Image (cartoon, rainbow over all chains, first blue to last red; front, side):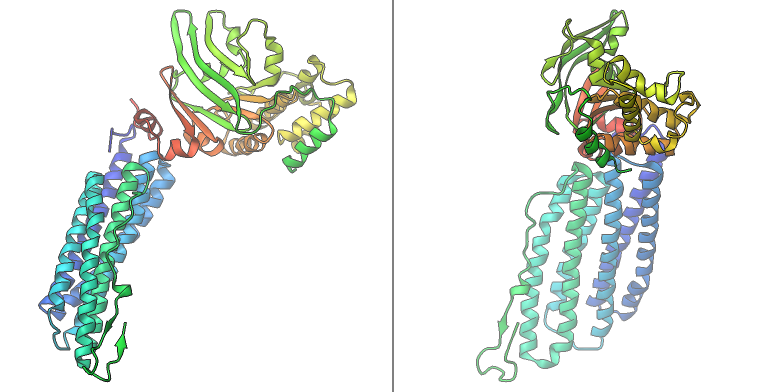
Length: 248
Length: 278
């Protein structure tokens, strides 16, 4: 932010808004890290706590929603002030979605704790989780410090997450082809991986909002798309398992 | 009353109204001003303003008090001539004709470029007389029927006809502030100007009267080119298509209104419109 406003309370309001977003972002980041942790250990109790804690994120979103509406009505902001408030409104709803995805990961973790472990999938998911978690952290730092370059870095790192997701997708399909008893666990893991991948996408959309907030427009670069899982086909080898057939 | 219909009706059925010619297409520059300077005695108030005012658009001039926006506005119909110590330099072209030239008839110029002031200033005469005064002295109307017609059409265009049609002979000063301001707008358009200059036309009005004037400005844009000076940023944002920001006698930034208010290029503009000045 440049200079202070003549009306000091407006500055106070804007920094309160920043703090609320930072708090909400911190919570979302923690939720993701706990959900991944519960998956790795595995720890159903911890997963339960993640599910419960999502309410706090939802409550913060509502708080930010009504606060931004109040700011728009009472301050009638212009230019960068307007962009800051609109960006906060959008980022809050993105963070709420991130919270939902973390909650979904936790739910599936509970289901998974009742089935057998499959290959190295969980550790790949944990790697994805680490990358995504640091993306959230960095994009929130970029938000607080109004740092477009840092935001664009996050934006570009999503490709790594997408690539991990694509390879995990392939890996899980293979496990399922090998052993139909793996299907339950693998399906949950597929969804978990997809959830984490989506969180990465949401981190990039926060990065776009930071760009809009600071520069006044969306980044006009083409977003790197590394997720090829939608096009992935893994087929059983001839005679390997006659019942498996082909799958996509 | 649908103003569009009134407008068409007027052009079709009122051939006696003077046509000033040189009409520019919408969006083409009506005024081209270059290097406009103004001195009040020793003190320089404007430092070379380059600005185009587009036809059938509302251009808002904004900036803090003393920035020169009203001074610039008053150059556009040579109202500054009335101040003896005031000197205007540079060039101001209206439809390609330099209005600063000595031979320009300022009375005719002010009929082409009308003005509405901050405080409603109706003449201490009847509503009817207020509106027909201009057409009468400019010899626009040829008889009472003509005058009646002009008065009615002008009041209709100013959105005041329904409210005053049964009391045309009552004094204009007896109207409410918002009605008085619309009466002044009716008076300005009675001589069929091409441009209307407005110097903070709503600053003495309540929000409802303000909204009515703003609605009127938007309707008038179809037939007139409008330049408005306003201290209300929200008003500039609401009514104008183009906005020019003045500061300390300089034009800092001008552009499309939505760009100026969402993504100003200049830091001074940003500081001013977001309330960080000083």
